[in-house]
Amino acid sequence: MEYGDYMEYIKLKSRAKINLTLDVVAKREDGYHDLEMIMQTVSLYDSIFIKKAENDGIVVKTNLYYLPTDERNITYKAAKLIKEEFDIQQGVYIELTKRIPVAAGLAGGSGNCAAVIKGMNKLFDLNLSMERMMELGARLGSDVPYCLMEGTALAQGRGEILTALSPCPHFYVLLAKPDISVSTAQVYKNLKLEEVKSHPNTKAVLKAIEDGDAEGISLGLCNVLETVTIPCKPIVGNIKEFIQNQGAFGVLMSGSGPTVFAMFHKKETAKDAAYKVKEKFGIKDVYVTEIYNSTCAKGKN
Ligand code: C5P
Image 1 (cartoon, rainbow, N blue to C red):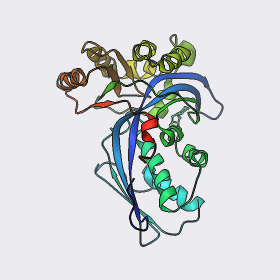
Image 2: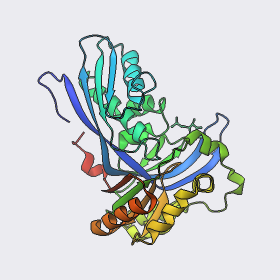
Image 3: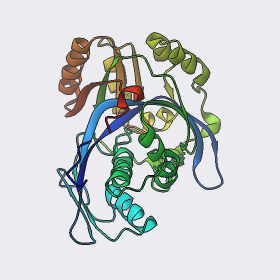
């Protein structure tokens, strides 16, 4: 975080997440699902710059021409919510530099939303507790509270009931997103929960994290939403299988997809695999990143 003389602007990093496990426990009356997921932040990030404006408007600029910059943009929504909730007259100018693939299962948008809430909290001296920011964030998306917290966490309920875990042991992470889009709402709608045969052993993965056992974590990787996304978008399964044979010690789809993530001990092996997966599937959204632990996050933003 960088401050102007009178805190006129702020710069933040908004990082991507992966799901080490994703279990759907039940369908709820309100249309959402009760989940149990182990979430982990990775180092790939979007940059967000927020400046106090001279008028009362909200202006969003982004490097991606196809992203809306009006009320439909989640950073706009977050700024509007904070302005209304705390009766802030002054407007803001938001510059969003996207690197995290959009609509990919990596909580890129939720992370941007979390960053705007954090940024405006500082910029306007709101002194909000983490709990209050999470409550506000949950109104804009189920993953936003986790993105405010970052690190290794167990998420339950809609995704907003969070328990911080001991930091996940380090490994390199290859992210590969096929050039297709997946609607999260549609994936949940098409889930046939009673037909899901294989659920994650969340307890075993929690134990592996506690023990700092990366191999143990890899053995427990499981995401029930694969049962919807993979049959509908076979390329996701093909990418998984291909990367599994490139020296990864664990491979899984993240969130509702379509991004596949893979665990590597060595950066070089991950880079080689990235090159090969790009070539093989003709995709551009392939990144080598790594586990980012919340303990390192303290004081950074
Ligand atoms: O909360 P968010 O807007 O990110 O969720 C997108 C969609 O995903 C929801 O409209 C809902 O259909 C589905 N969802 C769900 N259960 C959750 C989270 C999301 O069914 N726990």
